[in-house]
Structures are given as structure tokens and as C-alpha cells.
Length: 271
View (cartoon, one colour):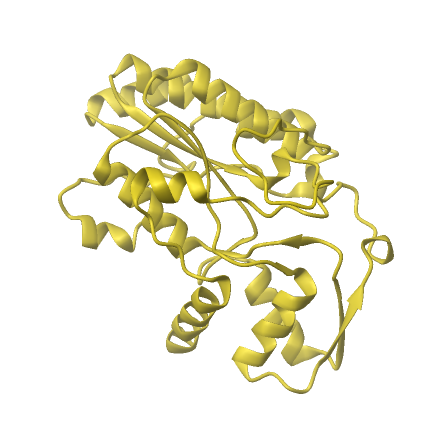
């Protein structure tokens, strides 16, 4: 969002982290929103350590459910709107067709359960609310799967990656652009799905990352989920149907590999 702000200069932006604003403090949020005459809140904050969440359910619930509820109530009180970023983990991943917004959520992890709670809090508290469920996010910033696979591909001769979890990688830059489009066109209340187009496994995604990064010295092997035990359940199939967001806001979504190339190009320039 910070990068795209320069292309949407008709708005004034306030980017905050915990140092600037504690979103779990309703009084502080209210003062910040009213004092700065905020018209739209985009909540990208979340507890996303999926496995650690199983051991820290209260903290996860505070950040993923309680805080979005606070932001939504304050938005409503100030006549503002809110866009809440959510996740494919609200589904258990036991289907084999892309999930629609009308499909009943059925999370099977603390992370997914608390994110669904955040969706419900936002939709209940604010009239001008949009929830965007996304999946497999990566970018040039912070730690993410793409950067990790590049690093491991350069460090190791062999690497095992699960092949039986299917979804769609999402470039955060594309998600940010979609959010800007929604803001500019105006809130149409509801829940929406957004990821890049196409489908792959984590194994396929890794092969593409290495191929496009010119990594040839690391052999990547497919693993079953059972061969890589973790605390939290992952959806085995969490492809999201994007028809609703494309039709409602006229958004054109690129294929995941096309966006991966863009991200890798930016990483190469930065490095």
C-alpha cells in the first residue's frame, strides 16, 4: 500500500504499526481516527504465525478478532469504512473446487478460527465494510515463502516441499492494487475473495521460484503433508473463486507466475 500511495495521491495516508498505534486500544484508535479525519481503515495487521497460534490462542484472538472489531466500531462511529484482510484458512480445505464467498466457513485451526471471528466482528460493527480473503501472500518485503525458498535453494543441495496442499500464490502488490481500486470506486459491502489466478502446490511454486531465479544446484523433492508434521492443520485445497471481486470492481487479476516474475525482478534490482 505504501508504494501504491504515490499512484493514488488524491488521498492522504497514515501508515501505522504498534509503535504508532496500538489497535487493541479502542480509546487510542478512536482518538487517532477522529483526530486525523480518517475516511477508510485498511487492516492488514494479524497474528500470522499459524503454528505458534496453537499455543497462544488468547494473543491470536486479541489480534485477529478483537482488534478488527475495535477498528470496525471506531470506523462506524466516525462514518468511515473498513477493509479487513482475511485468509483462506477460514476453510478446512476438504473440497476440490474453488471456494465461493457463499460457502460456509469451517476453519480447523486457531489461526483460521480467529480470522473468521475478525470477519464477523467487522461485518457486524460497520455498515461500510469489506472483507477480502486472500492466500499464500508474498512480497519483496519481510520474511515470506519466496524469499525463504530462494535462500534455501542457494544454501542446500536438496530440499523437500509439500505437494498435496493446493492453492494460489498471491503477490502482495496485486492485493494492494485491488484494495486501492476498491477505495477509489467506493465500498460495496460484503465478503470477497482475492488471489492471483491459477493453481499450484507448494512444490510447484518452489520449482517456479528456483527456475525463474536461476537456481539449478538444488534438487527439490515432493513431500506429503504427513512427512512434514506441524502443529496447525493446513487446508489441503484452498483455491479461491475471484468472480465476485472481478465483476463488482472491474479488477483484472494476473496469473500467479506472471506476478512472481515481477516480484523476483524487483528483488534482483534491490539486491
